[in-house]
Every structure is written in structure tokens, then in C-alpha cells.
Image (cartoon, rainbow, N blue to C red; front, side, top):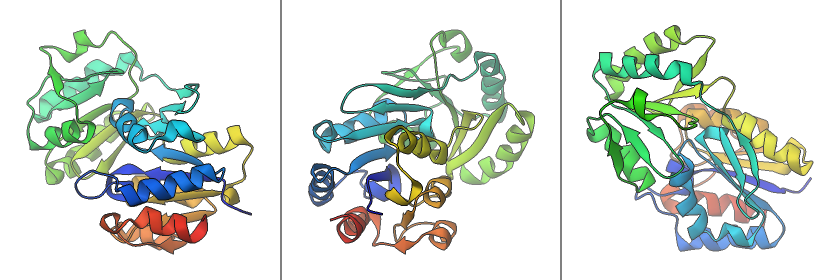
Length: 268
């Protein structure tokens, strides 16, 4: 079967180390889109952090999807149709904030237009601010501030410290939230069952596609379920060993247009 849907992780895969997509990769993706292949941006970033890349790629000119929060929010970028939106249970917010306060690490959450945190905005939290190209709004009490729907909360911190706290926090929320690290310094707190596999499958199912018609590209361990689902799983050369082990094809790195290389080889 030919590829009809391309699902792309952003950081470390589609974007280079400067967090940018090259003009060459843009041209290749638009060529695939004009050929009738759908493009899906699959990221743990909030919608406000994914939309600028979708805009740069001109995805509104082709059939495309933006999958934010690892699939917690999915939008048909061309039509604006909301395909999925999963609410974070507000009952868990005080406990999540309390965890961050106890460990002395910042916790972030997002509205449609803003990033909110109690701070401090240390080097780890600032990585997310940079990813989203959006200043964070500092508030005195995050629990009282969140009176709007959210999809995700995220604790930021030193990777070695998070390696310990991840186990403790995951145990305390077992059966209620999915806790995992998309990056060594980001501890994601998500509603149960939200991941890139489920999100990409939802998009494919809405299009009537089989896994064999899906190509997925990634670099990090949270991309593994998506690559395993796809008929063609592509790892960029800078991917983790675990991602490379399950990939069908290893492309060049994110700094060498690895996505474009794979799309040219298998789609164009």
C-alpha cells in the first residue's frame, strides 16, 4: 500500500537543534501534501506551541492535522474541526501542584493562548517557554487560577532529580494519570490513555486508513507507540537506541533534514 498519512514528531525530529524547520523540509512536505498525502504534526507541545510550525509549513493548503499534548487535543488544521479534546480532571490539580511544591520544581499548564506557572522559571522550565516561543504567565496560586479546561500539566526539573521523583509521582497517581518523561527534564502528567499511538490511530481511523498506509517519524521514547503502529516507522539518526531498535528505517539526523530524506525516499 502507498503512504497516505505522515505523522511527525517535532522536537528532535522535524525541527533541528535550533528548533526550526528548514525550507527544504517544508518544500518536501508540501510536495507530499499536494500529492494527496495528509500531514500530521504529533507533539507533546500545547497547541500554541505547534501552531506556529503548522503555519510556517503552510499546512492549511493541504490536508493536515495538528496533534498537541501527545494526542490530547487533535484538530484538522485545514478545516478547524476538533477531532479530540480530553480534559484533565480538575480534581487532580491540587495534588499535582502540591507535588511540584514539595519537590521545589516548577509546574506548568496551558490555556489556548497562555502558559501558566507559579515559578520559579528555572533553566528547565525555560526550555518549554522557548519551545512554545511564548512568555509564561506567573501566578501566585495555580490551583485557584485554573478555572478553564486543560489537557496537561508538566513538572520541569533536573533530569537526575526527575528520575527519582517520576517513580514517586507515578505511584501516587497510579490508575488516575499517565506519568512519563517526553524529555529528560519534562515530567508529563496526562489523562489516562493519551499517547501518540492513540492519537495517530484516531486520525487514521477518521480517514479510513490502515496502519500500512501510515508513516511515522520520531526520535524519543514517547514516539515508540506511534512508530510501532505505523506500517513504516522512521527513526532519525539522533534518535534513542530504543527508537532505532523498533524502526523500519533509520534516516539522517534532525540537523540533516532526516524527515525530508525519508519522505523523498518513501513518498515522493
